[in-house]
Amino acid sequence: MRQSERGEKPQRTLFMTENELKKLVNEAVSLHRALTTYGERLKTLKGELVREAKRHKEDFIITDGGGSRWTASGTDGCIARVNFPAPALLSHIATEDETFDKVLALAGESLDDLFESRHYLKPTADFRDKAADALPRRTATQLIELCQVECSPRVSFETAETKSKER
Image: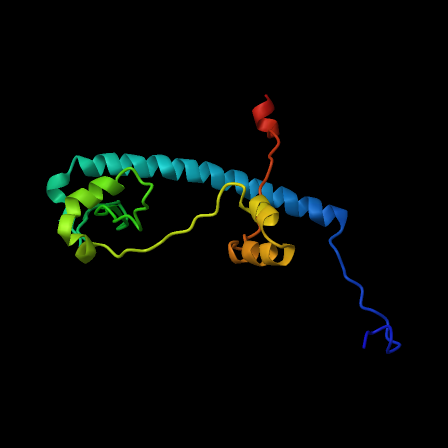
């Protein structure tokens, strides 16, 4: 039974005022700008650390996973570790992959011992339209739902030039 049917007044949903919303957007955009600046600087510093690490291969420590690691210390006891992971195995090699035939040839009779054989399905580019054309509506809808994954909402910003940059 609804609140109105019970004689109760419905509760009002309170929204932000226009001024509160503007302040929220300003704060979010300001933070986004700062994070972008810091993120770019951090990416540059990490690149410099990787380049320096490569100059010190004699100091590398072999890791359990077959990769290696180099460690450098800062002035206040902080450290930076540069990890060089071992190459990762491909999750799968599809029959269409250009390496597939080479893998078959190299593995030879050991193929079944070295690889698990699986069948992969990948929806075509126009999958939704093709399913709708090829199948009854209900079946197409069910199939499309089975082949989809929910996506998280994303927030992006468009930032105006700051007054200090306009000078």
